[in-house]
Amino acid sequence: MKAHIARNQNAGVPMVLAWNLAPGDRGILDGMADAFGMKVQVVTPDQAGQTVAQLLGEVPVTAGKTLALQPGAYPPAIVAANFRQRDVATLFDLLDNAKAQIPLRAAVTPATRQWVFGDLLAQMAAGKGQGTES
Image (cartoon, rainbow, N blue to C red; front, side, top):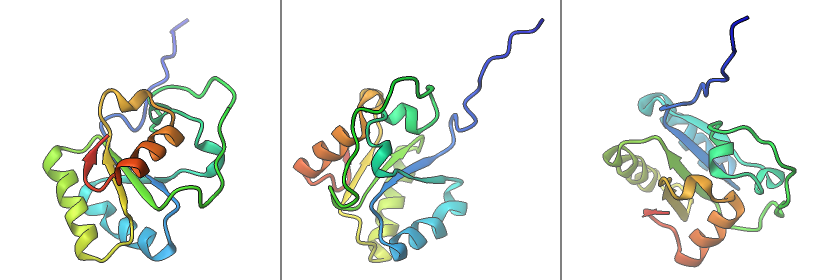
């Protein structure tokens, strides 16, 4: 019998984890998806207890969720993963040019892949997250 290894279908694919976006801002982001070859995944309040890696599909969700947030607990936010540095900067610039109201923005780092998403939002809100690498 052959062993079956679960593969992450999102490996290397640019992804944006989106939190609390207004419909217009979600539309702006979705409109940019093809140009960047990216996927946009909305993070729901009951997913806030998952790690960034779990939300990106890099590791399975195995433990029970210990954190759930209220829908408006933090301002609108995006977390970009698997982008080249210049591409994430371009994405953020294009969002600014389109007047998107997404005040918290970050790029995933190796360390923050292990963070609980709700904790990352709290850190971004504390530092105002705009253009930071969290």
